[in-house]
Image (tube, rainbow, N blue to C red; front, side, top):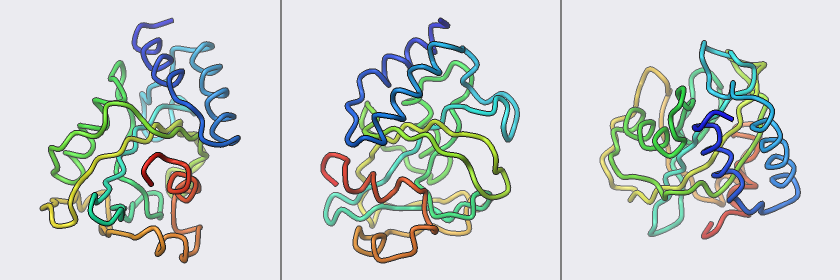
Length: 184
């Protein structure tokens, strides 16, 4: 096993599933990581057809609201994040993506708190993202410099607003993330 894939395997092995679906996703991911070293996206949008992603969920520590971005390609409100580059550690991806996408240099927690396996939608539909979800505490009044090429906009959402909205507006696992992740 390639050393960087072994590192990702260790990260995923350390995750404690919060529900049955996350346990299934963890089992799927660990099997996938044992079967192949081809886990990093090499060619946009979907080569290989399944690849690693790091999400970074900004959470306001005062009120627990989360910052989501209106993603151009997906057509959904998503946490910031992106594809893990070849041989990049997923944590390093999270740090890079939050800076590139929001202009924020605050690092997320060192370990992901959630794992999902999701078939993509939108203009890049048809491949599978294996996503590690990191959390970063950012105050709502923190200055942001959103990447206008990737997003139509950014917005702070309360948990109640997300739960009252049409689930089709968001990543299909966002409400699970809010209900099962520590401190959410």
